[in-house]
Length: 145
Image (cartoon, rainbow, N blue to C red; front, side, top):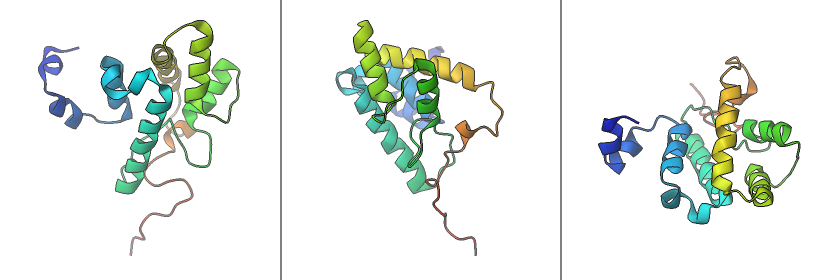
């Protein structure tokens, strides 16, 4: 971490965020400030809100955590990685695994997230992990008349 980043104000750090991964790094640094009781379900809800804001504002950004009407890239990866399928979502799968192993759920989430990002960085740009952008799937944007 650079000295400039350590001394920047919370407002400066928030306005400097480029994508959801910058937000997740803030969560990693200060989990108690962002996620109530370390609950991944609270983090999941926050990320759904982030995704909705992207759609409302027409922002183009890859988003791996929630895809309305279809499994998210992170959920599909987690299913393969953990060998467990669940309709309850990635947060529940990770929380159950963390509880079974006696680990904090957020710690396990960030470990898995780092692994996911490491594996995903090798994919080509046309892969499905980069398809969730702006408007929700199957939703038409404003007409370009």
